[in-house]
Image 1 (tube, helix red, strand yellow):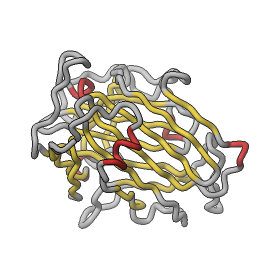
Image 2 (cartoon, helix red, strand yellow; image 1 turned 60 degrees about the vertical axis):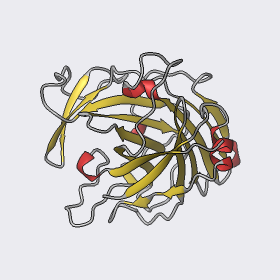
Image 3 (spheres, one colour; image 1 turned 90 degrees about the horizontal axis):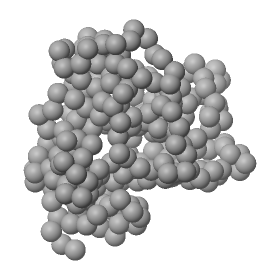
Image 4 (tube, one colour; image 1 turned 120 degrees about the horizontal axis):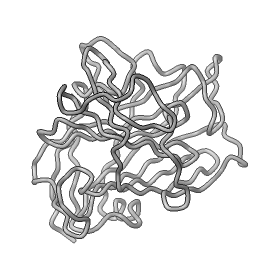
Length: 262
């Protein structure tokens, strides 16, 4: 298991997240391609992650060589609300987070058009009952899938209070994602949040999907392809490579460390 120490800053992080993470010199995390699933691509994907009084802030920088200037765009969760759709068919960035001792992990997947697919996943039978047998459009209901020998129950009716904003500028895709602690059941209200305990160990992964053509070239921002290059924080050392992100037994460790200095 890969291990990362994530700071909990003594400030709110919802607004101007990237500037605040830079001010506190939060270290970056670089994603690796899943072995045998790079499709010949070499794009850089990095993320800065920190908690605050109000929730978790992510700041992504993803290299997107070859995109035309006319594809440059800006989106935010406030200006671009859309029904849940299968963004994993497109070029997207993803976050999975499992709180300490939780039987659920939570997912956010955002594509370059600003669409977000949010859900929670039960890792034990009996917590959620499957209500659909296949993917529906828009995404809804509870779907059971067996991945890497484990049954997972995807609850697409779950709704996050996350917010995000993004820009695509020529060679780079910038995304800021904020997730309130209330999404993890740590507080009853957004105004009165409860942060994770100092030293507590959560688990999760950060992922990227890069759709490519048969020859290995990247497709347009919203294009789809049967071939995908996959980056993540999953640790496949000594295990069979199953090219799927939803393998909680391979998640990285996220250890929270509270910072007191302003």
